Image (tube, rainbow, N blue to C red):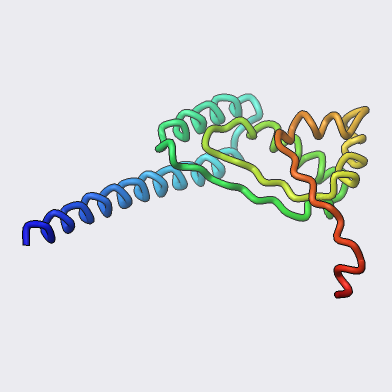
Amino acid sequence: MLDAMNKAGELTDIASSVFSQLSGIVRTLDALTQIMQVLGDKDDADLPETKAELAKQLSLMSKDFCIFVFIDDIDRLDNQGIASLFKTVKTVGDLPRICYVLLYDRQVIAQSLHTVSADGQEYLSKIVQFPIPVPKVPSAVIMD
């Protein structure tokens, strides 16, 4: 009976910890939502202050907390959209506890980034910290 009570106590502690972390995540997501709404109304001069406050709030989160942002089909954007997206990622890419996963055709993006930089490959390498090239699938494998 005592063993069952100890296990029930352990489960209660674990559940309490999980709910506490979820509560923190919800508060952070609420704060992110509010900040994003405010960003639409802010002047560019206010953005560094807003970013600093967001970074402060995110750094207070548990070490296990991380937001993954997946952005796919970037190479389908026009040149202006690609440049804007990468400028945005460059601006907010250093926020704590946020990891961006960008999916694109490197040649298309590098060529497009020539509109904002003399060397699109170099510009891209300054933003993307850990590229993972995916090899082209041979036609024979597709046909099989």
